[in-house]
Length: 267
Image (tube, rainbow, N blue to C red):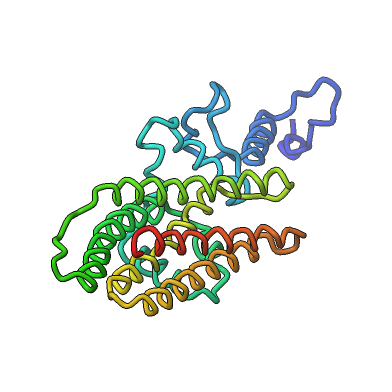
């Protein structure tokens, strides 16, 4: 047979067998169309351990879910302390400017619980210790025979007030916003409220001055600054919704905390 006839296509002839390479190509193309990311997700169901390509938000949510080991597992909270000194100092300085209402956007990628725990703890011991000093100085100012004594109840009251406020108030606002149909993030609320307490640490050192008028002026300035910081950030968080009273309520509660610190610890 002439060699020129061997080059004729035969796939259209009856009974001809398609080339194997075409099936392999289809299989390869189909596999590429269903490309998956390796390695498989931890904790996924058997046979569903691979993460399909998606948006970055989906990836972050999946990663956060995978890092959660349970409420009583310390490793579940490591992701909320993934900050260094520069980040913490930057957020502390940012909290001292009440006109800035975009703190949630600043911490959106990495909210932390450092402010909630360590700033609250520092505030507890600062107002308890300096409160005793201020009481002694005021008593000494009126009675020279007054002797120094440390009231341990200051520590107990400070711990209950500060920890209770820093934990329960953000939690209440988070659940209230969810009930009203608005999205809320409890971790971000805890973060913002924790850093809002830092200004009270600074003002506590000034409240030791045994001049009542000056004390009231200091606490009113500090309370107003902290309350504005909380209220403006809450207003920007609920922007576009008819929930202005939420921002007003946050302002009132924050200012009430400042008055409580002055009246109870620096009378």
